[in-house]
Image (tube, rainbow, N blue to C red; front, side, top):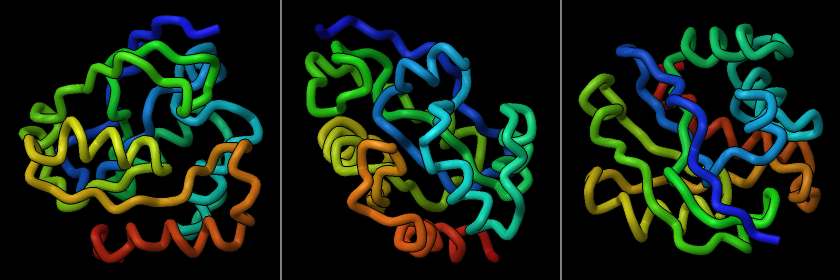
Length: 165
C-alpha cells in the first residue's frame, strides 16, 4: 500500500564536493536508520568504498566521512512522493528536490543517478534546471540482483574522473 513520504534526510554535502549522486527517495530502512543506503543488503557503501580504495566503515558517521573525504555528495531526486515501501516503480505524485542550493554551495562537476527511475525523474524534473546531464549508474539495491557486485563496482568507477582520482 502506497504512503506519502516526505524526504527526511538533509543532503550529504560540503563545499568541496565535485560529484552528486542521486537516488529516488530513501527506503524505509534508510528512513528508520536516518542515513542513506541503510538497508543492510544495499550494496552502495561497499561499492563506493571499493571504488574509492578504502574499506567500508560500516557506520553512518564513517560513511559520511568517506563520502566527503572524496568529495562525493549524496541526496535524492524527490522531496516527496507516494510510494509502496521501497518500490520505485510504485512512485506516484513525485515532487522534486531543489538542487540549486547544492550547486551554489559546491563546485559540482557531475551528477549521477542510482538506477533508471532516479534517472528518469531527474531528466523529467531537474536536468533543465541544473543544466547538467546525469549519468545513470546501476541501482545498488538488493532488488537489483541481476547486476553482480564486480559489475556494479566497475560501473561506479565512472565517478573517478570527476573526482580527479
